[in-house]
Image (tube, helix red, strand yellow):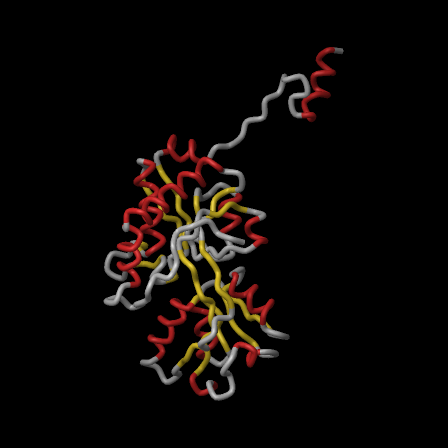
Amino acid sequence: MVFKNILKCVPLLACLGIVNMAHADALADIKARGTLVCGTLGTSEPFSFQDPKTRQVVGYEIDLCKAIADDLGVKLEVKMISVAARIPELAGGRVDVVAANLGWSPQRAEQIDYSYQHYVSPQKILIRRDDAATLKTNADLAGKRVSAVSGSSSEAGAKRLIPDVTTVTFKDPPTAFVALQQRKVSGFVGSELMLIKFKQDAEATPVKLDIIEDPLFVEPWGIGMGKGEEGLRNEVNKVLSKLESSGELQTIYDRWFGPDTKFPSKRVFKVEEIKG
């Protein structure tokens, strides 16, 4: 009889202090394993992309992951993932953090935790130059087809902010870009820096491109972690804050966005808590 009563208590989560539910601790797991697994895109220059000479994945977000791993005293393992797989990879425990153009949204914040912002991205629309006379503003894309990466905030923003738009989604930015070149869509929605690179590349092709000046929206980016992983989140925020206060973040930023790079731009943000 006593045994049966104990069994009845188990679903009540230690009703008499008999059962103690263990809580996973990602930070402890990382230290015990000796490796930080960072999920990143690997297709989004200059944030994370394959160096054509070394074939190693490099970039702004890779440098941030390396700084976190160094601070923890562990090795860095970079795992390339798709945009749509960012949250599932975290939820499944296959990566420890996600540094993959991860814009903040209320919906995502219900599923995962975010670090302080490490980048702020204007989301804009790339169009063909021969359409520039009729597509001067974001509102001019109303009722038209635009491409975006599947599962991205760019896709969600286009649906939310452009009336009657049809979003045509692709697994990565290059294929979404090709759809614009091939006239399958009227615009391509994405982060400004990514669109600048595609615009530059298109200058050597018959199909020249332009970017609509006004942002469709602006989003802060953070590093994603599993929900409730306070220890890991505090550690990541500590590292980002240290990079900001020491000036090292500006050095990293200039490495990828400085005047002598493909993406010259001034840093107009600072590391701070994302204000949703």
